[in-house]
Length: 249
Image (cartoon, rainbow, N blue to C red; front, side, top):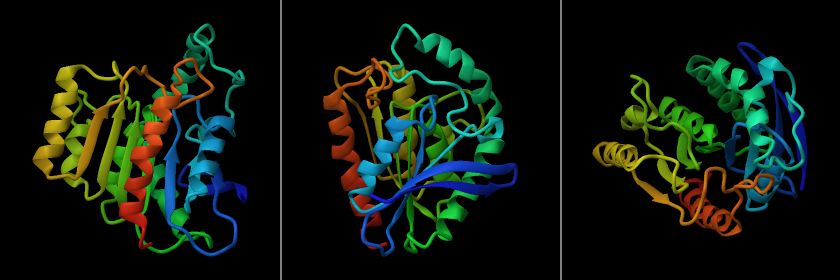
């Protein structure tokens, strides 16, 4: 499985990134993968490799590149509940600095970069995200409806807020097909209903489901939230979505 560590030019500097793609040469549909709060690390590099085995070029950028290369802070091998609050506290200023304006500038740069890679086929791309990365995925898909054919978010962050640019208010801009896989307590029933109503009203092709017996972070095997059955459900939803939307790329 070929992999690369890359530098992506952005308006604010150079974003380091990890990429994985299939053996054997040729061009492949692209998937932009936004990380959870903990960023690029072996867990998500392995996720990218596994996805690449299904025929995709997977790009995993360091969302915190303005603060240094990944890992921006020292991460434990396993982010257990006893250390999680301290790790999150270190990362919170970086998350807060990653404004919507910065995120959209980065999204432009990441998608433009993908179009220049020799391993990437012409045609639409997919954008997926975990935790806060799901919010970035939705924003990216809404900002680039001509380029993004699929968007998926798992244990998503704040998709429904009071802000004028809340992700759920952006869904009329989507042309992508959408899958959202929620942990049991990710969103209130009211917020989830508001999100699904917005998707319905916009005529978006979507699935939005609560994965049974899960807590936030369930796809990440380097955390205590991990659920093997929920990770498998994630693959069972994600791979057909990508096949439907990117198969002809």
